[in-house]
Image (cartoon, rainbow, N blue to C red; front, side, top):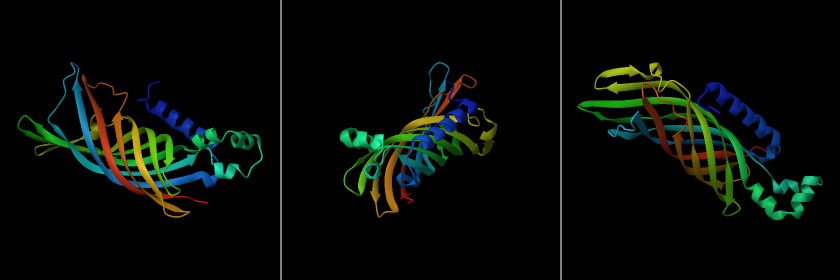
Length: 239
């Protein structure tokens, strides 16, 4: 499957969202998260013989994300039911506990992937703004009734909405550059600490590492992004 194809990516996200809502519990098992942080991005330019451009330095940029997440199995609500699933998981408490830690969700993000450096005697910088949509899934491990550690795997498609390359005093629009203006597919992981304040809200603190996958060569050169983000945020638990 060619994940760099926009049609394929749209299909993957659509199927994932349908699957998410089809298997997920009712509204009491959902949460929304709003995250705000900083990306520190590395650009990896590689030519046809494997040589790379080492003079670019990671630079910071904005990370903003809104995500929707559901629990695969809410054991507290399961105890109130008498159907076949409830009976099975009541008799298999270890399996119920493990599955209740699993989370699946979708996210929408706005990210800046920036870098700067020198090429020969010229100063060079890239400033970009991307929007993205994707899927995530993982496990939330409770430390106490209110605090937990969450580990997620993520897959995301990103599209450039604005970008500029600066070489000394020259400015080039990256929307005309085929290495930037196509669909960028990134995969990675998130580690975050959650703390529930009350029945409706919580806070979170975490780290995210992503990297481009399925990169295609343009003029014998490939470009991969590797952004790492630190973030804080809030969680909302509608009832």
